[in-house]
Image 1 (cartoon, one colour):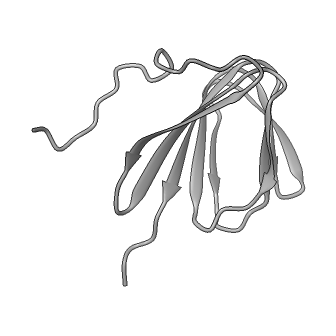
Image 2: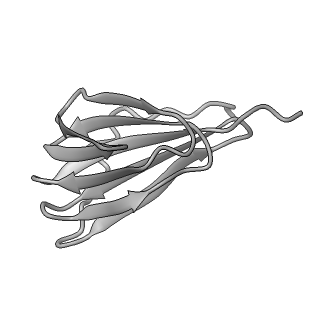
Length: 108
């Protein structure tokens, strides 16, 4: 049994629900959790914070990303690192596929 994960094109496997949001955990380990999201146009994750640092990588589509008090346009290739506790939100302008990496700290 291999001890690795391989996805040739995770965008192809994301079926975005009509008028909804898909959230699917791809990997959950001691130090990392990887979650793929699929947003239909007009869908959003309202403002919130995370208890751990995170990375957002937009793979497909156009979105508006709120980071603290700043609003940014995001599209394919956009990469964001966020420290723990940063207020953020995501609003899809078009159907969007994004990868979220939650970076868990080392055990003491």
